[in-house]
Image 1 (cartoon, rainbow, N blue to C red):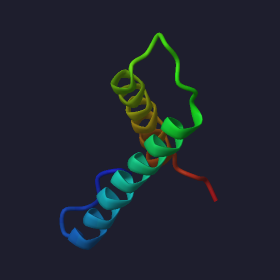
Image 2: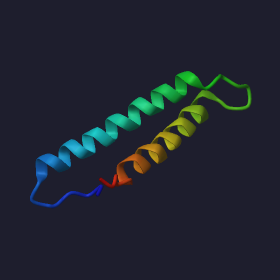
Image 3: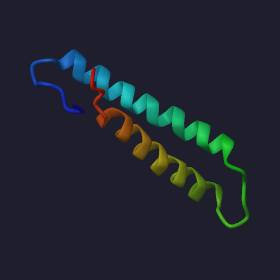
Length: 67
């Protein structure tokens, strides 16, 4: 589902742009929600938020709803 048909370039561009936008917005939200701790630097916290956002976004794009 994530990779569209090769003849449909507009759908592919919009799907990848939507995925990138979702990753950025989830990363920003998690970075603002999670508290600052002394154990993690800000770069490590941002990296952890990015990894979590990638996993959630990938999961939401690969799930197919049955109608």
